[in-house]
Structures are given as C-alpha cells and as structure tokens.
Image 1: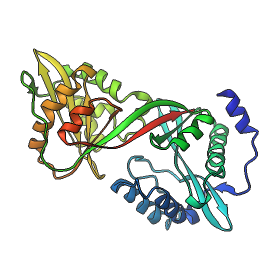
Image 2: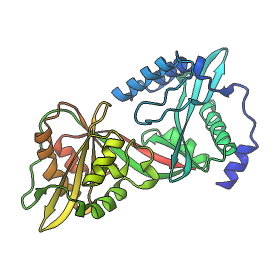
Image 3: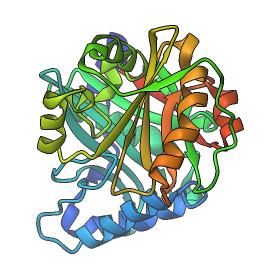
Length: 322
C-alpha cells in the first residue's frame, strides 16, 4: 500500500477535476447520481437524491444529514467537468470512531456516455490524495458485488476487501417460517448483556459499526440501556431465546425514519437459525407492523431461514479499506 500512496501523492490531477462547490453543484450532482444509479435506487436512495436537490438551494450546502449517514457536514468531494457540464463525481464523508478519523468514499458516478476513459480512477486518486493531505489514515468505500469493473479499479488502487454484507428486506405481510419446538422466548435481562454484547460485536464489528446510526449501549438491557435510547432518540424492542436454560440469542427491532425498520441479530452462528425461526413470527405478530423490515448481515449467513421467512436480498455490498 505504501507504493500506491507514494504514487498518488506525486500524481498530476487532470485539469477537468475541481473541488465540489455545494452552492452550485449539488443539484447537478444529484441529477448525475440519479442517472447512473437509476436501476438500483431504493426509496431511501430516492429520498437521498431529493434531499441533495433541496440542500443545493441552501447557502451552507449541508446535505449529508439523512440516513445512513446521520451526520451534518459540509459536502466535500470532486467533480469532473467538461464544457461546463458535470460528468463525474466523487463524495467524501468524514466519520470519527474510537478517536480515529475515517473518510468514506461515496457517490462515485460517471455519465454513461463518458465511461471507460479513466474518469472514475482519476476522481478516486484525487480523493485519496486529499485524504492523505488531511492525515486521514483509514479510507473506506462500498461497492456492489455485481460491479466487477469498480471492484477491479479499487483493488488496483490498493483497497483491500474487509467484509461482504447482504441487506435483506421483508415487506409487510405474514412470516412464513414455523417456530421450532424446545425454544423459549424470554424477557431480556441485564445478566444477558455480556453474551449479547459479544455476539453483537461479532455480527457488527467495531471496524464497520461507525457506519450505522446506532450506539451499542442503546441495546443494553435495563435502565442504562433505556437512558441511552433516550439520549440517542432510539425506539427499540428486544426479545431473547433460551433453550435448555441457556441464552441462544437476542433479536432487536429498531424503528427508523427511513423506508424500513431495522432488525439486529446478536447470536452465535450455530444459533442464528434457531433464534430467527423462534422470534420472527412472534415479533411480527406482536408489533403488527405495516412497515417493511430490514436486516444487514454477513453474506450467506442465515440465508435459508431469511428466504423461507419471506425476506428477499436487496444487495450485497463489499466493504473495502485502504
């Protein structure tokens, strides 16, 4: 990776690249992103585009304040401009986790008529150069597993795959899975927190948790967890499964302001199917939700159970870091 960074520092930026100016660029960038990703935009993505257009009219240019980012920051990035038209874009989203500054590269978009000219590579190089000049030591991005051209580009620049995660969505309706026998649904207790926390961090590791708008302490059972839910304005329901007197896992339902409410599963791999099959019918009946449910989980894990229950995979994202 050191060789890549040295090369980037000494590279010459093409004259078509300039910094993003939120006051005059956001609406045009929103149009470009919508054009490039029209076949993959979900309701949250459409809301995100709309918010960009609205923020383009604001003097401050503050626009990264909608999920999944949940941060307020001035838009940063670069555009590729030719003959007065923006035909390429890359966005830089800052995060801080464990006292460490992180940059997320997002919205890498090139107009279909101008692809295969090295524009995406040049924009990514510019983003890496700027991050290095700002002493950012960790740069992340996400790419769909079906986007082989982008995946090969990022690998060639030194990005390393860190995880593959699938987002599953269940539309309102009946859960199809049958509850197994021998498992018991119980109320979550403070004594469960040690195992719940350990399993949660295995499924949602610290190196990725900064991306999700959630605080781990909000999942904690008891008064302390309730306090953090109030502080972070989090509404949550939690259930656990016991079998032969042992805790097998915890499923949490978090309400959101986005398209779907979010499920979070804290269970060891050998108990994932048991916990999901036991709790999904129960919580769906208890909540009687008319909103979709979504769960983000490591690729291929609990796949058969989620499919049987009626969930459908939206997409699988590859997380990469340099």
